[in-house]
Amino acid sequence: MSDELKRQAAAKAVEFVEAGMRVGLGTGSTAAHFVDLLAARVREGLSDIVGVPTSEATRAQAEKLGIKLATLDEFPVLDLTVDGADEIDAELRMIKGGGGALLREKIVATASEQVVIIADKSKLVETLGAFPLPLEIVPFGLGATRNLVELLAADAGCEGEISLRMGADGKPFMTDSGNVILDCAFGRIEDPEGLDDALKLVPGVVETGLFLGIADVAILSAADGIEVLE
Ligand code: 5RP
Image (cartoon, helix red, strand yellow):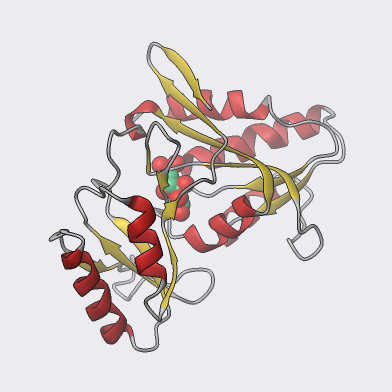
């Protein structure tokens, strides 16, 4: 989907930022537009903005653009987080983690008073699951953890492939927290809450890419305009 649509959604999200806010900075190509536009607003005079990045990639981008950064240890409660999504439904339930930042993204979003999601409208789905669900997994015991996830997926009626995400270097992709990712092609997730609860009971699963009850607002851009869901 066009970069221009992502930028339009990001531009709308910048309107949620006020002087003095502590802002969680998401990860991915759409969130990168937000960081870019936020930095422009800061340069224009929007004062006392502090950003908390959800990945090392976003940290590097924000630092380069001159956004003042902090950690959740310094500011455990944020005013706002703006982030992208891989899929979102009408109840603002999401799959995230396509960029591999799901753990930090969920920690930062959960610490935020308001969470605004930005995406082009092609990410809006009736039922979650066509996008493979990323799971962040501790490398120790990966084979055993994967077996348990496969059994659980079969129980949930999901027969899609579960694959270990690989990096461009041909080695398993490592998250910023030193974990690996299993991408689970569930196809249709009929009961996201039930699946999320079950997956979290598997030892070795650090976090799932199901973001449920986290988003407050979704800004979805399409060729015919921007739709805001709340
Ligand atoms: C990264 C994410 C991203 O927000 C998600 O993958 C969407 O990315 P993009 O805006 O590039 O489509 O969850 O872990």
